[in-house]
Amino acid sequence: MAGLHAITLLDGEVPTFGVDAFNSAPLFPSEIWEESHGAEYTWTDIWFTNHICLAIIGAIVVIAFWLIVTHKPQVVPGKRQWMGEYLYNIVRNSIAREVIGENYQKYVPWLLALFSFIVVNNFFGEFFLIMFPTFSKVGFVWALAILSWILYNAVGIKRFGLLHYLKKMTVPPGVPKALLILIIPLEVLSNFITRPITLALRLFANLFAGHLVVMVFVTGGAWLLVYSQNIVYHVAGGVSILVSFGVLALELLVAFLQAYIFTVLTAQYVSSALAEEH
Amino acid sequence: MIPLESPLGPLLPEHISELVVGTVLFVIILVVMWKVVSPRMEKMYTERANDIRGGIERADKAQAEAQEALAAYQAKLATAQDEAQKIREAAKASGAQVAEEIKAQAEQDAQRIVATAHTQVEAEKAHVVDELRRDIGGMATTLASKIVGETLDDDARVKKTVDDFIASLEKETV
Image (cartoon, rainbow over all chains, first blue to last red; front, side, top):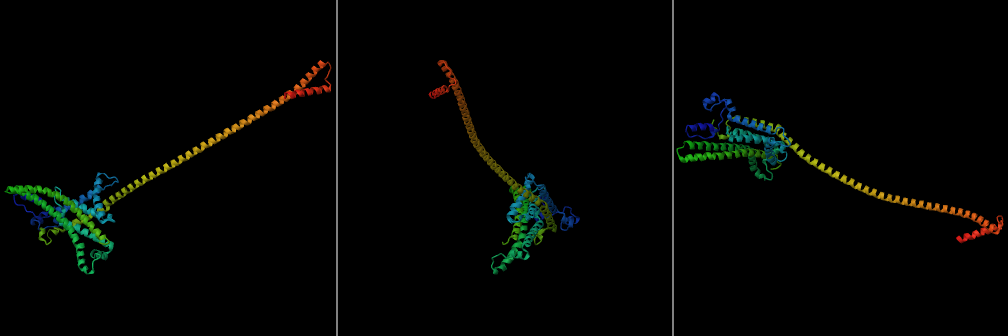
């Protein structure tokens, strides 16, 4: 946690950066957790953590936002509803309708839930007081990727039946029979295995790395600025802190972009599962 | 916990709780979107589309009605003009007829008056001639008697002479 590093800075020690900065902390640490410094824990230590709490706050924000902006919608919208419609239309028209096409309305709730849950949690990484993107914890990302995997396979199976769907997804039309022995494993790999993995990795890695970079620039820059004995390092520290603002701004863009990409790709997978031929 | 120690590195969830909580939260959000938010929005979009379509239809209808009213008005106007024309012509015709009738009546009256006058005059003339004949015959006889000194009254020859005289007088006057 960035907060812990701030304390080490006051001691004048060289701060350490690493993935342990992303470790969860229990909200109500048990004695076992306290004594073993996190090596051992009870169930409360892993089910009531700061990051679980963040995800729950994110979900509450998302639900509250949508319930408020769509409360008693009018044909002629007010400001509140207009804002809601604007965001709703990004998902409904720019993603669902553009990518899925026919009968896209069915998938709008899923894509809307996905997009808003991800984007809110991503913005937590740039939001003061919180300053931690929930999806830099890979467990949450796996959850969403697995759910999307289930979704697109389920709609494909529902439409074509299991065997027809598997054949459609693994045997591209017009491929010579001799090549099928090569093609089928490749198609299985790309359509059923790498899709959820890349979906999860892309989101996780962007958030994780982005947050890490911000931390490095801020804490490293602060340390250089305050505790180094060399004027060049002081300057470098100042520059590093200035750069961190730019990186943070970039992270805002990334936060939105990654939520958008995750949602578009899920829609794309649904669309390919529903397509007659691909 | 140091995630890097596992073979998956940071790709292994630190706690299984993240996976479970992430799934549960997503499902909760999904249900809210699916059952509340999306139906609200779609219903509103449908209403909006209907309103716009309805508005266009209403405008079209109003325009059609206006066109109809205009056509009806123009037709009525044309009929009215036709009627006025007919009435004018009829009036002209009947006026001429009335004048004709009056003229004919007047001519008839005039002829009748003239005829009556003629008859009257003829009658009076005959009457006067008759009287004159009588008076002049008497007077002439009386005069002749006085001149001759004798009565001629009962003499048929005298009477004939007088009549001849008067007849000659009539011839001269005619």
